[in-house]
Amino acid sequence: MKIEAAVLLHGGVERDFEAANALEVRELDLAAPGPGEVRIRVAAAGVCHSDLSVINGTRPRPVPMVLGHEASGFVEEVGAGVDDLAPGDHVVCIFAPGCGSCLPCAEGRPALCTRAAKHHGVGELMTGHRRLSMDGAPVNHHVGVSAFATHAVLARQSLVKVEADLPPHISALFSCAMLTGAGAVFNTARVMPGSKVAVFGLGGVGLSAILGAVAAGAGEIIAIDPFETKMQTAVEMGATRTVKADEHTIEAVRDATGGGVDVAIELAGSTKALETAWGCTCRGGTTVTAGLPHPDARMSLNALQLVAEERTLKGSYIGSCVPQRDLPRMFSLHAQGKLPVEKMLTHRMRLRDINRAMDQLDQGTAIRQVIEFGG
Image (cartoon, rainbow, N blue to C red; front, side):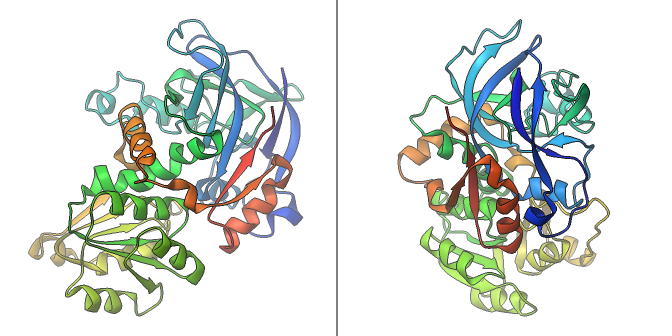
């Protein structure tokens, strides 16, 4: 079938994405779903910094590629062997699915699935296929999703059915922002009631971590970012204090907390931010990072502190989540008013606005933007 999609033809576009037409809206061909695959009509797709990182080259990916990985939609057709989804089902897309049979999956860590990493790294679905093409040539899938398009074919493992009563533009935000941010709080850091928590980077994922820290009962929640408007939004969502991200951040946080926070969560995708988060963590505390810097980036830390202060440094990919387990829990918390993800939604746009959305994300003038599709 013919679809409309935003295609990245060349990576390494650093600025002014609208002027450069970094993502070109083109007509593509989408093949029917094969065995173990599902075709969805995309309803809404969030604009995430991970998409921007592919455009500017921070996260190199094979091109041409249709970006977009945080999304919701409705099932239109299922391939052979898919018997637990049916046309009309409301689903959210998962960019780090599990195959269920590799060692990480067997250990309950689907985010580290070796099969997904292998296929997604070269632009394939987990099934090993590409279902997108343009002028007869194959087009790559972005982490098995490619949701900046009217329709998409995904592996069954890349979808979770939504049983909750949620509009698509809200459910989409759970598929990446909430899983990654709140998941880092709940699963990776295991924040305890009364804990002192600092969150570095207040985009959609960072604000999801703020909401997660509130839901987890953290006693103090410090929001840290260069932008005053984002820090004010964090306060509206439950942060108890703000600290501007600058050369005085570590001193300010340690002074305010009497020696540092129990948990520092870095979500800016910057090694400088990660080093600052480490510096803000107390003796015996935990520093968590879910940011995605350039693969060549390196950090430095005081190795003696790691031992003498019994510090912990942990990575967190998609919030160390098991989406089939964690999404229903998060939907339940949202229904109770405890994860009001809609508070961080600043723009609802159309596919033709995709490059402007990237500029706004890059400039810090938007938090979470959603591309919506009619129908």
